[in-house]
Image (cartoon, rainbow, N blue to C red; front, top):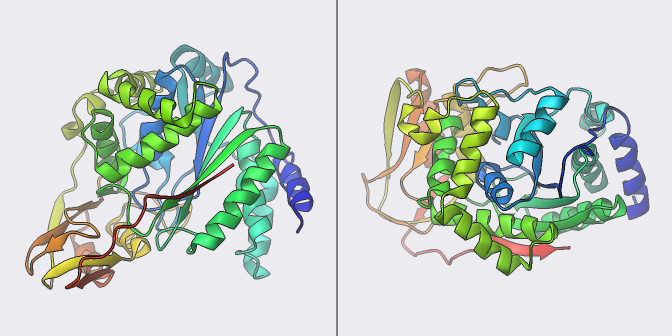
Length: 384
């Protein structure tokens, strides 16, 4: 399709169901959307950072499916947290606190579900215009002013190559601009999980640590760049100036306070954010040890996500239930030196019988070599 044809299809998908009217929200509204990855808990960090700096974040997020996690599932690991709010509650939360995160309405872009089913049986799942129309049709049904796209590339993402990711990012930026939105897309590395935690409550705890200024370096870096671009699109300054503002919001505790206010408003037990050790713990854990000496040269991030799925942290079908305490904590990542018998990860599950398959999946997805691998960038490109 031409860009014009893709835009027309996207707008038809957007207009096929309910749309959200955010006109009652006071101020500039910004959102970010990730194309999905492993260990991607950036929304839990970026949204409160941006909201703490005066930009409204009215966020509608999805659930996880397959090897990718979903923000809604992560939030529902917080006891009592409501991811379904009435329109009035949602707008009140954004106006009062600056941030609300809910699940997508079932009536959102219903044409997308029908098209998706057709794509599966017509061998067009990987059609770039159809992918872009699917993502942006849902995104544009929400009434945001500014949208930052986090387009993942690599083994743990839907787009496996940089060329594919650039093509998708450019197309989605063009669609958003045609709809009158301020747009930017970042191409980010998903050849390895983001951060050290994979799994719902584990990822929430890691996001909280990041908001305390103690998060993994890679997660913190990506979050600060994303937040900087969201704030910049909203008119707060250059991306570099806005990044410094985001770093200050973490350093002075205002971003963490914003998350706690949102959790409390949406019915969640804020004590879990104050002390993440209060999260329910899995009944069983298993240490995974290296089978060789050397450096972790490469990992298959999708297989790591699948290992977490085996442990119960994800779902194969939309109807599957999730074990919120299940998942993986990585002790070593790509580029790290390991010795034979050294712990590289810890598995958590309430189903002890899942450990053998998950451990084998993780170990077979971890390539250890004598040579240290070259460093890879976290951000490959910025488009728009």
